[in-house]
Image (cartoon, rainbow, N blue to C red):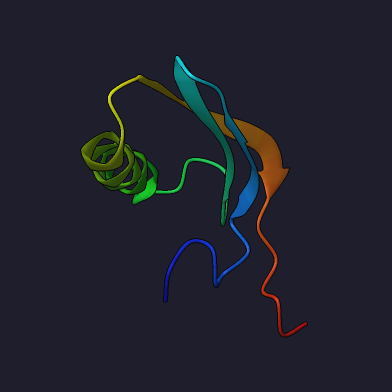
Length: 66
């Protein structure tokens, strides 16, 4: 499932110079956190010519089906 489908993307802000995305991970120190951030950055950078900023929020993910 995608980060959006899992409700892990909390906000997206777009300007001419920057795309900024707020994300949450599923647990503190998530072992897949760095890989997830790197993959998200790679996908966003492929879509734009401006800067990309990913913000990892201190909140934790809860499944959308709960």
